[in-house]
Length: 373
Image (cartoon, rainbow, N blue to C red; front, side, top):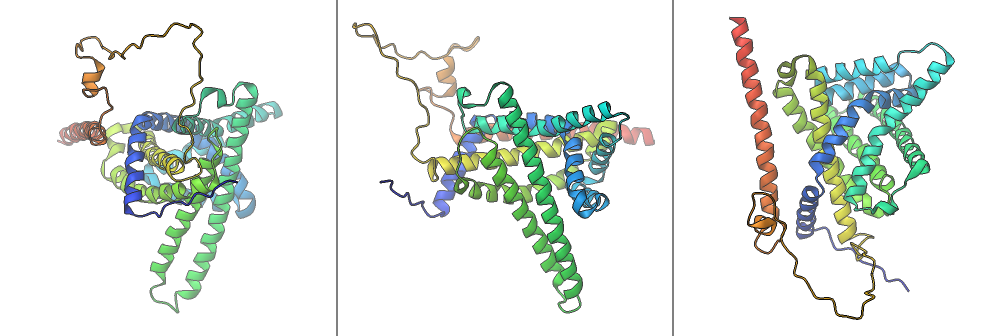
């Protein structure tokens, strides 16, 4: 008879323990590199993805209304320059093609382009969940399954957009009606809109965390991580928006400024998403349905020889120019670097990148002042 596992209360100590393990897993799984890959594929997938979402939601609310709502949301995220660049990409992707064959080919490539970023997200989630290669879908059926699943998530995104637009319209109507009765209704309206955004994002993240990895995950495992990711995403939108708005990226990168804004915003948003995925995995492993599951399952290979096998002590990995070996480089006993050291290394790399951006902006400002003289 199965015993029911009682999950511990989410107090400060438990939250700190999960956060510490999440940060360690985020570093160990090379999340910055995975975020760079996701941002790269998003640059090519965002236009066909929005075209499909607008086409589906446009049947209910009208294409112009959906385009206007998305334009306002995107402008609030990446600024006017980035929104104009995305609008141009969407307009180019929506240009009609002549002939039935050409239209069919365009639709196929549109679907492939829209689902590419989800395939990369699935690869990142499989890496986070340490899915073995033999458990991942392979071959033609695996490719088709991944594409169909990605397209299903696009349909879910369109449904959530329609629900969000419907609720937003209802809230706006209530705001018009209550504005004369309640003087402070504007503040309540803003709180409702923010709560609506968190709910929609939680549902979207929960679907991705549950359906995309090539392993079984219970719904009870993803809700906490999805809610944490949605809260971090709302906070990150404000911080990333301040950085993009104050950094002067458009003037620094000239003609490529709009694309640079999109890539930078998507990169930092991907880091928030991957951090939430790591949080979900740690929660499921430590306190959820994966609690007590073996982390690795190595096959047992029997020794055919009856002679005892001598035990050979592990030798440290020695790199060229490193006579002390990898063990001394990591720590005297070959242990991994402490969490504080890892976070410090990530902070140093981030500081160097920020310093480089500041230097580039300073040089660009000097050049502009010289030209003005």
